[in-house]
Length: 409
Ligand code: CNA
Image (tube, rainbow, N blue to C red; front, top):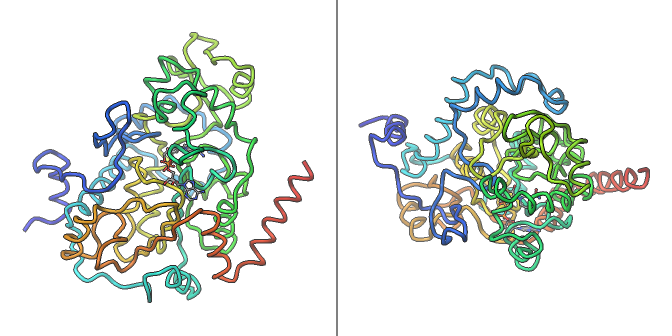
């Protein structure tokens, strides 16, 4: 029988048929009817094409200050082969989990009980030392930044204000090229510095202070994790950053200060060299993700011993498929208003019969041994965890210090 990696490779190279998507909520846009599965084309951030990584790096010789802050150990050998390998291993893991080729029969049971209490006990036991947090727009909504989907506040309800045909258009590169105004109106509204971190951001900072945070992967572009004092090397901004901008025609780089001035003058920023459109380096639909994302996810996820998934609908690829890259015994706790990343209940039942590793979160599977949902607001969930972990005093200290910093400014 073929080795599972080999089978996955064959699927990738077209020798075998790729599996049909079974995970709920794959990315689709209302403009396209809202039903098409675009598993490998993300919302902000389409699937990265490894062949483009080098082109990007050649034209990007100057690292910005932020990159200078990064730990050299994190980015050791940025060669194309390694990126390609990372990309392939991510796809292989994904396909293996879809085909249930993981080869894991009986998976080691890490949690005494599959519940929030079980996760808390596990953290308290001291066995859990490498937590990865994966976050989305939901950890920032209480700061006043709308997500795409929430009723009442999400961008769906503000389409007129931003003159958008559908919410995701705001981060669609083709839409941006034809009509950049809505993006720059939103950029002004959401410009980093105008918002404060939420209790969820402070909880992630606390995990770092406790020496438990391996890495924070975020889809957000609001930079609130940095405002909450997470060191740059602990954060992977999967969908890019406002710190630098580039002309989309000649690739001339612009500073954050330059872009900020343009945005606040209500200008559509145009290149001083070629008059092309200048766009902050946040990753739009169908654009490549930062190289750093692919480097770090390869080394981080195999080490992860607890995955915290917070405030995300897990609909944007390739980010969403990261949940399948942790070891098959690694507990995964979803803190979100609703269930996300689960397989279809029927598929979950079938997969539950076959395996406990499954694909996506196995919240509804009868053989779930590691996936837990803490449903409700992220901030409430984080405060609950803080209480249960007896970390209240340290949490309060962080919140108080942040308030002092606010007053000093
Ligand atoms: P999303 O698809 O809008 O999903 C957000 C999820 O969070 C949904 O499941 C909500 O129900 C849930 N949610 C919202 N508020 C809360 C809350 N307070 N507590 C718990 N759950 C909550 O957003 P995703 O991040 O999953 O992915 C889509 C895009 C949106 C990503 O690429 C983001 O970069 C992009 N985005 C980012 C920001 C930001 O930087 N703050 C804002 C809006 C969109």
